[in-house]
Length: 118
Image (cartoon, rainbow, N blue to C red; front, side, top):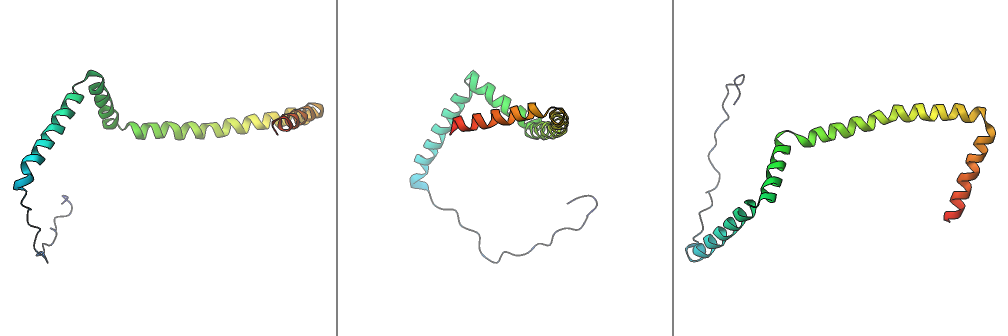
């Protein structure tokens, strides 16, 4: 509930009975023992210096929105390449338009390279 909206949600009665808790008294000891074993093993692994460092680094990366910053850097890096490529192709076009022999040499090299790979 927000401060602007003081209206409470309507409460409704349940149309069905809640699920009753299962009786696990027979298996309860084995389940709790297995859970305790897994928990202690996980704690031992997390106490290893390298693993603890990786866990802290991952938590810090997530707390500081590392995924969003990485995506933003990638996005803007890609967008910055578009104008650079446009200028490069325009400059190359002007140079090749004034040197038709150079353009023919480039075509010949491309055709030779593609013929060798076949």
